[in-house]
Length: 102
Image (cartoon, rainbow, N blue to C red; front, side, top):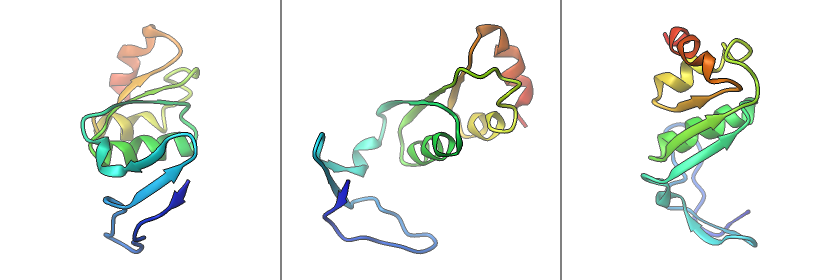
């Protein structure tokens, strides 16, 4: 992805309004994330960061991982606190996920 707009850095700055090009997608405006449904697959460090970024920019985010709720006990509370839907390996973990919320 190549930044073709004005790049902004530093605390409190945003990349909203910056335009990017990607050979597969063409031009994309990050403000188009508002109210878009997005699925993030995998809750490694980049998956969690991506989910939080997308949510902060207005997307309706669901994350999915093949690990159990117990294996993701460190990641799940922050995601739930931000209103992100979490799906794990099994539906039997639904009550477990809710108990992990701060």
